Image (cartoon, rainbow, N blue to C red; front, side, top):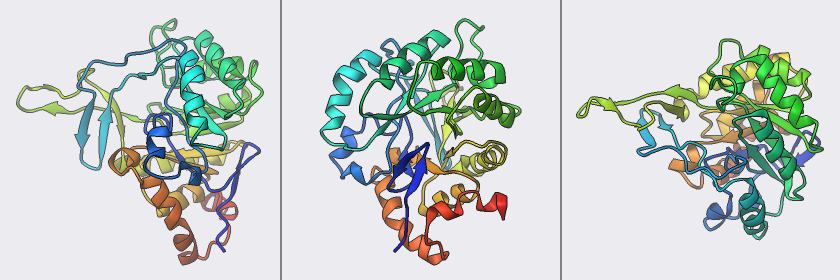
Length: 305
């Protein structure tokens, strides 16, 4: 019998498969398609202190083996999420959920995380440091070790639940940023967020996405994500969540061998709504094929091998 259980920051998951933030809404839409309790957990839509309408349209551009999105963190704001979205979710999802939080100042992160930390349903806080710091000249918090550490430390000071910091790949040295977050108290690291991409419409000769650039995700980025997960997992002592281009059970195992304790699935949910359910169903057969009896045993296998 294949043992798919893993422990993420002290909370046991039935399996390591987690739909990534921004690709699974607040869960209940997917609950109309299948029983989402088969998931390890899921990371809900990126939530900010104030409601956000998001970026102008068009927001999506298709690419070979991926897509570019510039949704702009559209969400109803943390208060509405707590008052309306989480009660709706509670009716269909009976496990702890991962709260994904974005902010445009350290104070924003602290406010939202402090509120969500008090929610019974929330098991972990996934802090997205890829947002621009409006007080720091618009530079993303996640591009500099000091800024990422500042957010981490401030959030940890007000939260009792595990804080997982989600890193941007659009940096020179992702390991130094991961180490700075660990030093500041992060309980885990998730990576990678989207790569920065662009498409141009040949008819209009202008960028396809109204915001000009957007986040590139999908199968094309998997080797980049895998490499970064490997580099970070080799350097840090806290659990790592692997994200980026995962679309099969084989990808999940590859990510875990690179050092991931759990694995998030993003763009695949947008093209194949049953992707996560299918990956979970396929995992036992793939484990059997590669003589894996327990997923916990293979975490970091390529590092320690």
